[in-house]
Image 1 (cartoon, rainbow, N blue to C red):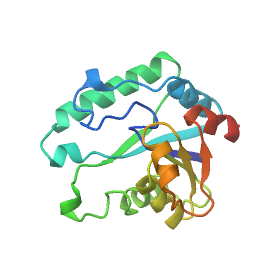
Image 2: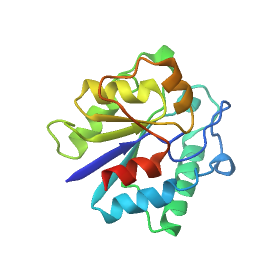
Image 3: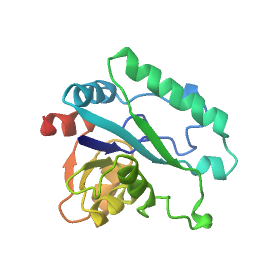
Length: 177
């Protein structure tokens, strides 16, 4: 099975410092949904792994998060793309949970759910250091995109060894094909 794990905000859709709190605020980055369609056509299972501390902070509830993801799934379907699953952490930093990136619990859960003993060489695409750190820790292949917070992340440095850097998700997908 070919699997790829994508962060949501800053990779698939434009990010917001105020959090994406309702469907109207979710706007895809040009080319990202078509890139997901290309992944699907190449036989990849596309999974999203996203921190959503806005839930823990009371900025949105599960109904609203589901509505945002519903919009994302519908937008994907319009271009022939499919996201197989969305994994998310609803906690804040104060909760000290295992699922909030940069901890690896969410990625470990994805591996378990898909019956993988490890994530060796599985592409993990993110725009921040906290997306890439658990990927590297688990032997996955970290990809930094320069959309979202990616350009700032690159400048700040400290990327895990072996991180590959691309302009956006479409460029990552072109490399994988």
